Length: 260
Image (tube, rainbow, N blue to C red; front, side, top):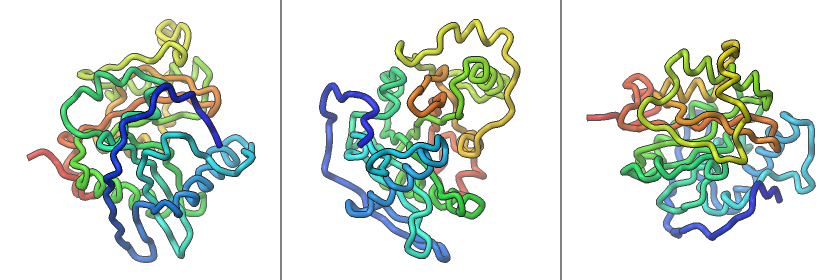
C-alpha cells in the first residue's frame, strides 16, 4: 500500500453514494463497485509507477487512504478497464489529496458542493480514442447527481526542476490561465525555494499536458503556485473549474450544466 502522507484525523464520511452506468458503442462508463476498484488501482500502478518512473511497487497497486472515501469512475472496453478517475466529493469526505499541498480553506469555504478530481489515467492503447472524452462525460453525470458547483484537482507536469517549473508557470501566467479572483497558498513543506525570484528570468514553456489542456478549454484556472511532489517526481498545479462558468461549447460537448 502506498501511504503518501500520515492521516492526522479521520475525515467526515457519509455512506450515501450515487450510482450510474451508460454505454457508448463498445465502451461502458460507470462508477466502480467495491470489487472493481482493484482494476483502477492496478491500472494506476501500471501508468504512474511502471510506465512513468520504471518502478514497481510490491503489491502492484497505486492506492492511498483517500481512495476509501472516494468514488471511482471507470471506462471499460471489451471487459477491460482502459480509463479511470478518482472523484472525491465534499458530500462524502473532508480529506483531500490537494490538502497535503495547498491551503484549501478559501476554496472549501465557497458556496456549493465540490469534487476533487484525481488519479486520472488512460491505458496506452486507448489514448488516441474517445476514452478521455467518455471520462469527462462520466464526470459531467457525477456533477449533476451530486449537484456539484466546483471541480478542483492537481494537474501535474513531470518535472521538479525549479527552472522548468517556473518557466511553465510563467507560460500559464502569460496566457491567462491563472485565476484573478481565487488564490491559495502552497504549504511550506511543498514550496519551491526562491520560486518568485526564478520567474524573473524563466523562459516560457509551451508543452501543456493533454489533461490540463482539457481543463483550460472547459474554463479552469490555476489558483496557486506549483507544489513539489518529490515522490512522484512532478510539480502539481491546482486547477479549479466553476461549473457556472463552463464555456457553452464544452458544456454541450460533455453535457455539462452551464449558467442560466
